[in-house]
Image 1 (cartoon, rainbow, N blue to C red):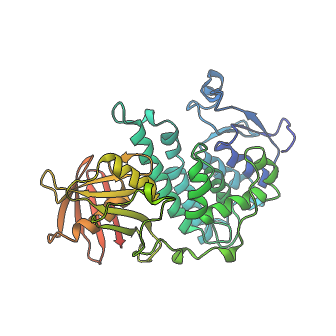
Image 2 (image 1 turned 90 degrees about the horizontal axis):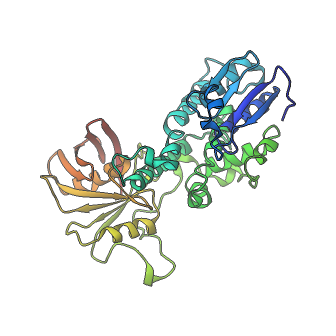
Image 3 (image 1 turned 180 degrees about the horizontal axis):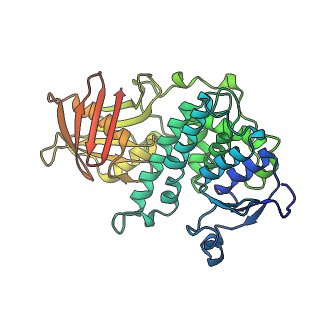
Length: 388
């Protein structure tokens, strides 16, 4: 880390937080800066003195040598690129590569980063008392879905862009380490379901300008897998359609659909690329034989981001549907609704029908292409395809 001086940048941040992306970018740029520890664990960011720096009372905040205060991590990163073009933190303006870098920088900033607050503090967002666990579970499912989208976008080996490293790689690496308390996500889900994201993070941790800074926040990971060990995004395999659910350690404790209940493993949001979508288990329990506890146990055992169950019709709908993550039931979610449309729609002649969710009925319409579905409920809209 550079020595402090009167002309230094001053970064207000906390260990392991989003401020690490800014610290890494400053190190890559080779400019002098110092870090003022604003510990989230100690709630320093909620203090009166820090509110004078950032009224939102969130880190990071960056004080520039010109005396300006910058907040919002994406805005800070873009400002550093503009002010230190010699560092080539982003591709040149007007190039297709820069356009893609900005696309994914803002995707992370708007679609992934905000979910961590919901995961860590679900009580701030629960619709009614007692729904915090379901709120967290839904946010965790969205978190994983969105990382899968980013996983498929990684074009380099190991960087986001095929042309090489850029500051968006720093942003990806830092945020992929969250949420810190979800050990299963970090140890199992990310390395197996998003290996390119994992390899990118490991590569960032080993960069010359980043290594010492990274080690101050996280243990240094091992070297990333070689590019030859990674499958191309379009051919990365999901479980075969005919495969049974993964076996449990003991048949006596295996949680799988009871004998006689049809079930389907689908790829959703495939965009025409087989075996590249979001995995979904759909169990047809049209006589309501499974208890809530049994459905949750099955979802936990299968281990997909979400599993869904088709139940008997209510309220004039073609079916009642219930959706579970590995941790809790959620009222509704995008890719399960599309996958459920494929299963329920196979037994419905009409081009439009409705399914009853825990959030109320949702309208479903067939698309022009095979396995294509549109779903809508008020402001919630999804378009996707599903294949078994």
